Length: 536
Image (cartoon, rainbow, N blue to C red; front, side):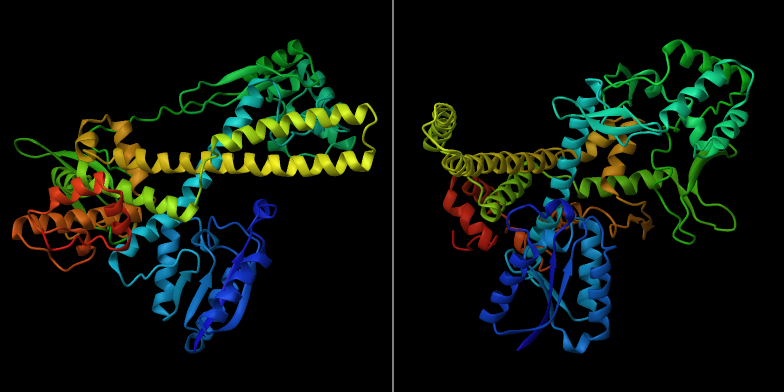
């Protein structure tokens, strides 16, 4: 009988989501252990976000397993997003558990990590929640910016304001007890007789509480004159919008204070140097000895100039710029997908994604039901107003109709979200086609953006190659596939190495891809085993 530790997690923003309750997860895990004859040693319950492993209960869990390594065989949870929503950290943590002899697995998304192909699906499972988090974050940012463009300040209120509600029950800034101090501060400063320090001292004597640095931000904040500042984002420029909240000072006084502050203070400007186009990797490459970012420079020889990436003294790390360029281009060609491989991987992810999410769109019949329910709700309200229903009957019927309507709309919303996530994967894979050529043809800014997307942290060179330990796990698997494909092309036979089952014997590759894209049956079979039959 195997001894296992159970881990259940639900963050604050997931408390209301169906199927995410701690009790529901715990019951599923206990039932699973009962069926598979497993002994539950301990259950850890967590209520923190999975963006990192810096969670109190998870730290206790890891400490418990380290102390009781001989008594624990496995760690179980319901899904991989309960374990973590951070791909790179997950791989390191799984490695830590494996070194302790503890197998980590999800009962609803089980994987046998001793099989190389399963490693690719683990990367998909772990990256899905991370992609969803990023999508949710972008949606929140879009919603906040939309509100700011309407003049509605929805961020944490500054000193002098509290967050209230207007007649439409939407958030709006309302002056609080500190508002009078803010107004007085601007009036005193506008006279030109007092410094910021003197004004702050006067206000503190009257009961106003703030720091010197915070006061400096207050007197420069255009929110107090009724304007909303919107920061630049992506392609959108910085904007100043007329707010709908009550200003604490007039525009004339605010602008006069800004003129006085600017005239009385020295403005120091730092001219930042542009990144040298010769050194796109500057700041990304770490010294293998001291782990500091390498700097770059050009020195003059007898007949020509030579460029290097090098470390600070006393480290003697020094790479020729042309060698570094060759190593990087070699690495990028390794993570570049050809069209056939991109289509295969895209189909695999789509098929497994549908299998795991089990999301289906509403049928025409369901849309008719939605329309019918909405009409019934309107009719129910009319009948209630006419006196055909008492209050209790009306509320019960309304609750029943709305429950079904919400269920249908939730299914529709879930399908749309899952479709968006799947499209992100597909678009991401398409961008990996001719990735090396795209990098070479890009300008210096785009090159550095691409490098930042590949390497979550800075990287090092090892044996004249890019050390791939810290890169995105999916890219690492792609590099491994490409490496084996190239070796097979040279040797005309498959090599039994990591992900070797993904590689086909020479002469079968074109046939297999064609069959894959045209036969649903073959696609289903490929999820069970990616090895095609040797029988022609």
